[in-house]
Structure formats: structure tokens, C-alpha cells
Length: 483
Image (tube, rainbow, N blue to C red):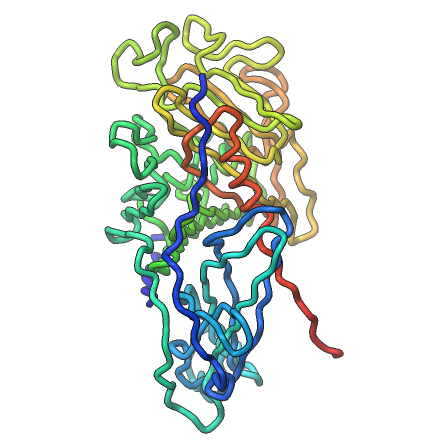
């Protein structure tokens, strides 16, 4: 089953190796599905291939199914996903609806002032999600059944499947708490951003947080000095929000103008899955008017850290713990690491040769992943990068101002990494520390995942989950047409 909530406000030191275990719900018995194709309007064999040499268990697969109708007959409950296991045999697997769209006819719209454009070919589409399993270098076929056959308005009472060990959710958006066997994540009750995260089997004391109160995940932020910073966490409440939830997946959307810069329209979407150790994050930004900006950033993780050099368990006033002790990222065939507290000056700021004060590392904007972890307490958080986009829908220039991945510790009680889309050439208080003009129509977008993990000596677990995320099972598509 799926539940949907929608709200709109108008302006209103290393450890033992980690083994990633992908939990399964347990095998179900195969059954005879002969003749099922006559009980549905449509059926399709959706064949997935494994091409990365990884055993796949519980990999999320999302598919759009459509029915032409005027008006559409009720059919969303008349969907089945069957993993084929031989001629006429298959196992029904759990699936979940995670969104629907209708394109309606003029007859349906009548005299409504809905903002919709009527269509000559009305259609209803729904997305379904299920968890697929496939042997490495192998393939698996899931037969999709959907829609009611012509002249039959009553769905048949066919066997279904239920995910019995799915996601756990409490709260009312934006103040949601979501957990599975890998993690427990809490969203900020004001803005809806990820506020805290921890491993599901870790004590509350090992929760990753930002003691200065903002959430740890900044989806987007903009700085236009002499005006102040504007982040998605600055929302007093999300201008718009929607949650599609169920036992297999929970997708939480937030979108609208930034709190202080209403000409910047943004969206941030979190997708949580049962039996998957990461949270998928997609973010977009659109500049609807020309803006003078010093920094435009996405995909930022900020956690508490001590102010001063020294023992570093706590800073002088005892408020800020070191949530991370190290950062790590891929470097060729290996992994580079930096200790957050290394080379700190008297004020607690990182002071490494060859980079600006406060910088711990300056990496490529598209470095595959970057992670922070606590070596002694055996927890970490990694950003796994999948894709990014920069463009302009009005044909205006796209800013090319030192895009990078920035790791920093300024000694101000926190340490962070971010993915700048626009940054100045010069360090603070130099002549080159200038704003950049951002043209109207500029669009930035990213897709990535946040992985809560236990560190191991070679980051084998992080690297494997990264490959699973960016090299998913591939559809063996036979093609359509000719048109």
C-alpha cells in the first residue's frame, strides 16, 4: 500500500574489514501463472542484466506503467510483479506505488480552471518500485502484469505479496524519522533536511549531528554578499512538500523558492528503501533572475567539530564533539585519507601547505565519492556521486567558476564537505575574492546517495556500494516501433 501526503504553502586508524550484507525477506514459493495474461490488459517481460560482476540482492527498480482511458478505470490495485522461474512458473514479489500522473480529456476537465491542458489521448501513469535480485554476470526476468482487460471492471483476486520487514517511519512531515536494518535518519522538524543519522546498531551517542542546530545535510545553498547565506535549511517550513510512503520505499520531496532569495527555485528529494544501506538524494536549482553570488553549492555535509588544537575530544567550552576524525576519497586504484585535526593552527583551522587556510582537501567536483568517519567509534557517512548537470534554459552563459569538491575545517566548531557549482578564485579577503554574475535560466542538478557505513581498512564496503549505486542492473530492451 502507498500513502501520500502533500502540502503546499504559497510563499508562505582503521578497523576490521566490513562485509556488506544485503538483507532479504526470505524466498517465496513459485506458483503456476498460466493464463494470467488473460486477466490483465497488459503484460511485459522486464529482463534485467548484471554487468558489473556483483551479486545483487534487493536492488531498487522503478518502472512507469500506463493505461489509456477516458476516464481511466480503477486499476492501480490490479498490478502484479512476478519473478519468472521456468515455463509457466513464477514468484510474486512485493511492489509499491510511488507516484501517479493523469493527463485528462476536455470532458473530464469540463469548466475547471485547473491549469491543465486537455489532451486528445488521456492517460494515467503510475510508478511502481520493487526490489530485484540477480546473480553476477547473469540475468533475471520480472513479468509485469497491469490494467483491466476490456469489458472487465472487476479485478481478479489473484495472489499478491507483502514486504513484511520494510521501512519503519514515524512522525508527520517534515519531522519524519526513517529507519531500516542499516540506519536511523531523522529529518529536521522545520525545514525537512536530514538532521541526524546513525547506524541502526549504534548507540545514540554515536549519532552524526551538528551541535550548532542546523541539519547535517545542506541540499543547496547560495551566498550573495553583502547579503547573508541562504540554505534549504533556512526554510521556516518547506514551501511545498510531498511524501510517498510504504514498506518498500519512502520518497520525500521539498521544493520552492529559497527563504531569503525568492528568485532561486530549488528542490530536494530523499528516497529511502527497505534493505538498502543508502538514501538517494536528487537536488535542483534554477536562477530565475540575474544574481550576484559568491558561492553556489550542493550536496554539503556539515558536522560538529572541536574549536581548538589539542586533545580534540571537546573544544574549550565543551560543546562541540569531533563527529568525524578523518576524511577519505578515491585516489586512482587506492584511497586517500586526511586526519581532520592534522596541521591545525592556534585557532583550530586547518593549515596545509599549498591550499588556502581552512581547506583540508580540494578535489574534483565529480570525485566519485567522499566520506567522513570516526576511526575509534566505527561509523561514517559517505556521499556517492552519480550525476550532475549545469545548463541554461534561456540560452544564457553557464558560469564556469572553479567547480570542485571542498573539504574544510575552519576551526569554527564544525567541519564539512560540499560540491560548489560556483566559487571565487581568491581566498577570503584577497582581491580575487569576488562575486560571480549568475544569468537568468541557469540550472544546476545533482543525483547522489548518502551511505551510512562502518569503515574498513581499504574502504571495500564503500567502494562496492558505490558501484552498486552507479552501475545498476540494466534493462535488456528489445525495442519499439517502427514508427
